[in-house]
Image (cartoon, rainbow, N blue to C red; front, side):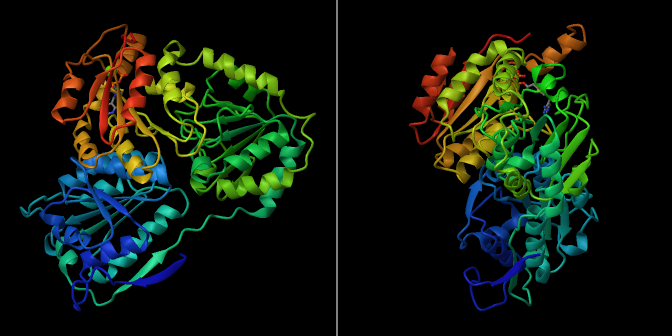
Length: 547
Ligand SMILES: Cc1ncc(C[n+]2csc(CCOP(=O)(O)OP(=O)(O)O)c2C)c(N)n1
Ligand SMILES: [Mg+2]
């Protein structure tokens, strides 16, 4: 661990030794935390009391699920860990769902929780917020999970949490501090501080990769979320240009390279489609930061060429799902930089793929992608959102159209609850993203069903006066499920029709503008108007049924 040590100054109210809670907040500050998301309770009074005089901003969520998604959106937009504070028991179980999403999508989120006083831990003796196995709940959704039994161990736990989030695959962590530890005075004021370092790949392996790439006839490059996280795009494009290699991405890899680059075929791969034809004609695939998971490969139907070179920061994922012929453990950005340097000066004109052919593949695979007939709304969103603006999507049909057809140009400007697939992600994640990047346009899209999972977080956006056009694609149906019941259950529909509130009237209740947009053009206009306001705007978009 790279560590420096800070000492507590600002938060100690008097000369007395700091408490566990004061040290926890001081340790967050020492790690550069500027914002925390949460909901207080009598089990976190000490933490909130220590937060008050600190320089950290507290954003009050309306439900811990919202706080978790906000911290996740904050992390995805900024690249810095998001932090959430929750109470024992229901606070912890409520946040477990968004932390499950952060875990599958490799997003660094730290949850700080309390628990009953030490003598009552896990004892179920009738204490308020008793949870039989709080550590077990959070073990299921985190990379690292610890219970701090002494105020002297608080700051090392926080530093270790940051080390876990900043080393290898980014992922959530949980630190539980029992009530009496929060209030107890420590004997030490030391605050170890972890400073993240990028993981250097082995230069010999980079050399070997460059040689194999140079001797391959046709190389395809594949970018996953690791390429976004490592900001590897520029070097990956340089490799692609040196080899005339098309670049594919997963949904999580969107934005790693600009999707309007002539060599990029985006996230359009599908079994048997034109992008798949490109892949099948290659003799080498170079993968940056992807687990080549079940969803991305359509249940492992993606066939790989004989040479499979993989770069990953996580040792397990480096060979997960497909054994590489050459595996390089390390930061995707550093590896891409090294390989690009080794390939520079290469004359690519006579090797690799025909660039015009790649352009045609893109057009043709867009034409045949999921519900391409609905692309007008996606095109309207792309026109309404600046190049560096952030689109936050949910589990709605229009999002799935966008996964393929919405072009992303910059890293960290596209979010999708990819792995856990949790409805209600987009609005709170967008709130977190906007708090992390207030200068950017941030727009969540969501279905009428998904909106009702976390609609309470509108209160947070109103209270924080966040400029946020919320786009609800409204068909009064769980259409994704209805379509699946149509496709595979003979149209035997059950549990998919919704009686919804009027979302324009709902906006009125929050004293914010609510508008109905009836066409892609109206949507574009209403987004432009909403971006002028210092509050959220609900844009309800009635759409035709999908099934
Ligand atoms: C927490 C959670 N519960 C249930 C589901 C299953 N599910 C996936 S999509 C969907 C329907 C979503 O409806 P809506 O938000 O209106 O979008 P639409 O499919 O109609 O476009 C459901 C219920 C889920 N993904 N997440
Ligand atoms: Mg719907």
